[in-house]
Image 1 (cartoon, one colour):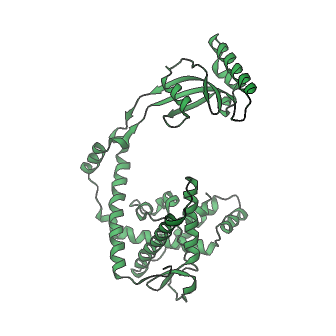
Image 2 (cartoon, rainbow, N blue to C red):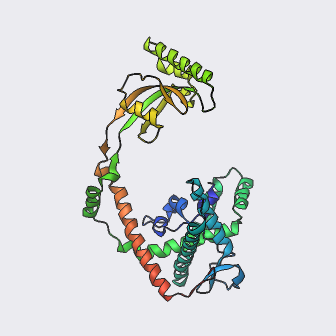
Image 3 (cartoon, helix red, strand yellow):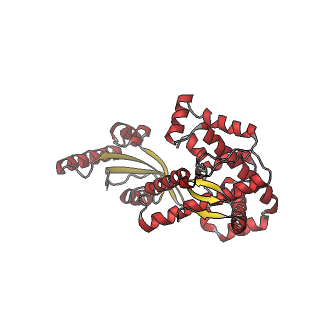
Length: 348
């Protein structure tokens, strides 16, 4: 994802964008934020804009949420599902459409409260954020190309940065001082949730692969098996595993002597994983067959199941508990705002 995408994807999870440490951390959360591009958008001065009902999916106190913004976010969500092997259709698609619109409405409600409270974007901050985004591109041509890929202009990107600032500033000013996380709470969470702090058993191993595939002929498989068997005999006779891996392995790890580093159960295909976790450190496996071909494995180290010490994760626990409380407060705020707002769903 390019850096323009990182900024325009402003997914709410409100509690993920907001952090009591201040605005400097906002870029850490941009992967989980949702697009907030509202057609032409409103300026910081809230200049009057004619509402194009035909191009709006909802009105929030008279302010439009454009169909372009809705379609852009819906497409992003569809792509996320596709990356997980799921194609949205029917009832699932309808539910996602409803949730996307709900998120956009929630954002607009909080944004309007910020503007109503007199919050405006710090232009120095805005320009600094824009400069940071541009700095991640080799030149202006690449930057402009990324904008075009997202159907954006720099003006729309600036509108987006200002909106993020106003929403974050509003939430900071209302909730930061109200949330306190005690040492007792943190310890209690650590003690009651050991599953979050478990470090699973791991193996560090090297391997040599002689590759085959489902279309390999019986003759090709026989030849590959003979090759891997000969290599095993050479290793047993005293030749160096890493040297032979560099020369003969069909896996890219061969360049590093076959070193795969550390892995845990579930990281490798079944037969390979089973052999590696059973094999004692320093010993050589028999020939192992997987869908990728024939392997020789040697384990260089093993780590048993362990638990991360409280002191090592106390900061993360504090952040998690803080964000959980903040999320609950924000959702409560949104429900209160909805009770006072005029919201018209034009998709219905």
